Image (cartoon, rainbow, N blue to C red; front, side, top):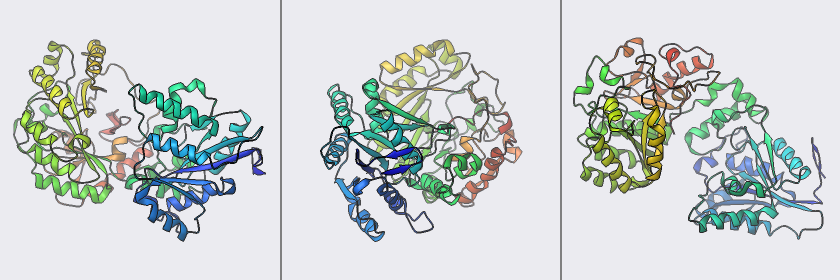
Length: 540
């Protein structure tokens, strides 16, 4: 009998195997994270084997990791794992592998229950007691699929009855036949089940405190997430409930920047009514100053040293289309593994030959995201908001959609002045198969008139997302506290510059920003944060 605080689970009537999903692991799965030398992978396997009667533990992983993983686990005395490898994993291969793993179970007998835990091989802090509680409820309530909601990601397993595998595969085949593929993501089982959710008996384990807003991911993937995992482990994550640690020590959540917004050109062809940049006393918007590709390259090299992976926005202030060598600037970003580019543009000033040249850059069609700011559906509203140029902006959207399919979005800032036409704006662009962003209005900490339609801010304020994971860099290399600081404006006189990336290491500047973030954890806001409500918005 397998004992748990929630009653006994009888191995004689319950056939269980464990699937450890390592399909999306990277090298950080092999980093030592624990005081005994265990890595994310070895600790996860060690814990998973305790859940697998008879050692039925299957490790799904890409073929390129088999040698290093097998040697690593053998060295740790953890070789009682069945390796299931594929050169290339996709949803069909994953579901087929589940079927094959299920075939290792003995033939079902009357009254027996056959099921499997689905865990992630680089997520070593999954809660074993939570897993056993979910198992008890899965059996007690005759569930076919059990999952947890409101917990940090990867702290809980999924539990699936073997009898449901055929149903899930059929849902995938049906989706494929209708022309809708379901990509192999970390939520693949739920993504498929929700296509016919009423066909399954589902048991949900609800967290006592909903921590989804923290967006905590407990997998050792990439430097940002691996550092967070290490912080939690060092704070007692194996002996204390992780949700309690996160609530008590919110400073652990700030690791390395994930979104870097760089100003590469000063001028802009439009004077948008909701933008504070044209009103800055320096009048930099009227000058034509540019950052060189070499200067950007020096920034990017420091970003990679600090973060390993990041999104680089090339549109902090000014119009990127006006940069005299925009192709080279984009190329500097996407030529570096781990970095991707985000280009927010008015759609004014682009030459089709330049767009063609950017599209021919290696990986350009996968690693550049475009956002065209339109703000209106009607011509008169556009002119009132942005001035002339709507026809050119619309032509740019079409040109981008042709060259970068699936990576182009149109954007409208939601205000009292355009609220009436936003539904029409949304419906029109969705019919064109272009994604739509309806952006919250920002008055830049009181620098602009308040035009937001409604207040969507949380009831209880929490530390700013942008201080936690964003960095902004002006044309001259100055790094402001956040995006609410406008170059050449009075806001810079308030001690809101953290340093200059051309004069000192980026890692030191990032560290300097920690002081304000820690103040936020104490509910101390300061200038300009006290007058800002952008803290809950998030850059993906």
